[in-house]
Amino acid sequence: MATDDLARLLAKDEIRELAFRYALALDSRDFETFAGLFTREGVFEGVLTGATVGSAEIARSVAKTFKAFGATVHFVSNHVIDLESDSTARGVVYTRAEHEVDGQWIVQAMQYWDRYELQDGRWRFAGRRLLAWYAVDKLDRPLGHDTMRWPTAEVARRTLPEAWPTFAVYEREKHAL
Image (cartoon, rainbow, N blue to C red; front, top):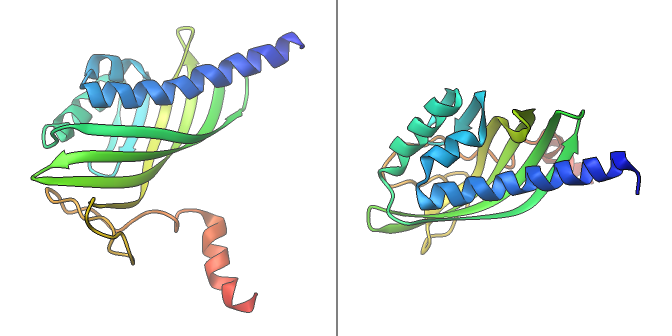
């Protein structure tokens, strides 16, 4: 195996683990570790937090949001990583999150659109945008467009699948198929 191929595999593995460490930091409420997963100038766009800039501010904002939750469980699954250079990459991560909040068990299907950068010898999030299909009580069904049902906050309509440009084209043209 060529050195370049090995370096690419190692970079992808470190980036993949970054997403796992993100989930672990959230569920264990380790916001110091969480902050270190972002570049110093990192940007996070969340469903409940809005856009936040800077690793320390991102951690503060997310910690504040998590005060409303009891236990949480984040399951990370599909992770597509495209290396752009030796120090930058983009990725898409599927996640299922479960949150104990106000006597309900909220289940959320979401996807992160990520930008990664190598900073101080480690891969970190340079940008992370959370998009969601739904957030509903475990006993509820996430049908239709009103699928964001957080008990503690007013949340905009779902962002997926409509955020994908290819899905919008498909929706316009599906009756012609």
